[in-house]
Length: 144
Length: 144
Image (cartoon, rainbow over all chains, first blue to last red):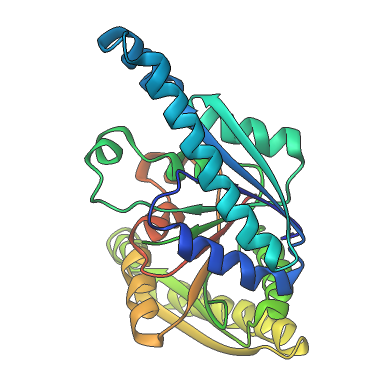
């Protein structure tokens, strides 16, 4: 049940708690983690619209930061003997995460919950909640 | 993180999947499960109102069934070497579960999600979702 875990992340400050949980789940059979980071295409669309001249540079910066953050997380998990596959995709986060759940054949999902401090999430409903509601597999929710 | 797990249950058909998950978590350190079953006081209130003459008998039946179901689950987990503490309480389920989380000092919570088939839950929002949102500790959601 915990063999291959999908780990959607926006590299926020809850990541350390999630990584600690994955290390413990290793004892319950976790051998592979699929780390997915989704660059929200709605933010990119807004950027094209409002700041077209900065678009290419900013986009490159976002992608580079995501790749660097993902690499750091991968190194940390690999040190524990857990295989890591990194997916950096572009789209609507919930949709991309549920697509990866299906395509990667994971056996569970681990997510950080963002709590009430984030106004955007409070208004739109959090990605974590949508994943808990719509996923096929067990979802482990790590609280802030 | 998975040492002492709170397991709220209504003994529905997802229980077997949750129990299977707990058995796997044993390898990640689970040594104690606090099983909580909440008899919804709102149902009892309705029963007093609509069927006062049957109230005492029906209530006794509900309590006996809960105790018997809890005992069966406890035996199954104890066979795996996991200590089980059973709480059968009366009140509003979400409130009782969050109270137990605090009072029992658990390190995580495991719940079954009920999916969309249950009309009452669809209308009222599920207990699982409220627990995921309000718990302090990690919540493992097992999908139907």
